[in-house]
Image (tube, rainbow, N blue to C red):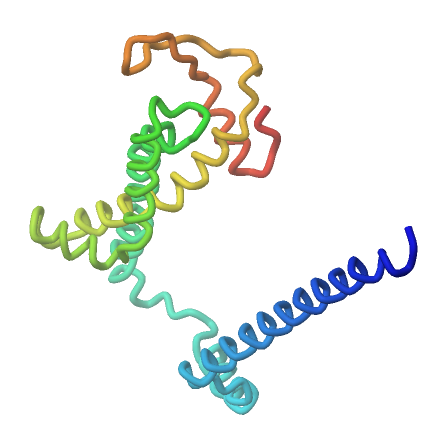
Amino acid sequence: MSLDAAAPQLAERSWTEAISLALRLVLALALVAIVVQAAIVVRARPQDLITGAYGMADIIRRAMPPDFGKIDMVWWPALETIDLGIFGTLGGIVMALPLAILAAANVTPSRFLYYAARGVIGFARAVPDLVWALLFVTAVGLGPFPGALALSVHSIGMLDRLFAETIEHMDPAFPGWYRILRCDGSDYRIGYNMLSGIERGSHGGPVG
């Protein structure tokens, strides 16, 4: 190929590279602008962490050693708080598992249920747990129970995302799969080892 014939291609390539470089520069500047405006809006003052270090150290100093003189007044609320977390987590797992099966692309019975389940997961994550608690208070009244229900529903968003992604990365050829009937009556395969696979995936282990 002669130089005259190759010149237009070289010019076009140089223009493409120049445009790509310009776009990257614009995106980088936009990202910097977003970070700067976020720091301005939240009134970030990192220097206050240095000047206020004495106050934080003073609080820690006054909190040591702990005063166990009023332990009889705090042990029950502390136990209630722990049990709220236990009940909320277990309730979230129970509600999340069926939804995770629908939200996993490789085992969901239909695309409609897939997107519906994903929508429910996103909604559960988007609504703060305090809003769920206020909603359940109107149904069951005050007390720890509405708080536990709120934690359960709010946990669906986090747990279902983990469970669904773990199910999608499971190996279908892994031993221990059995058959159940699909919603439309056709044979549909799902693994009873799914729970163990989810458990391994949540700890970063292999799932297949």
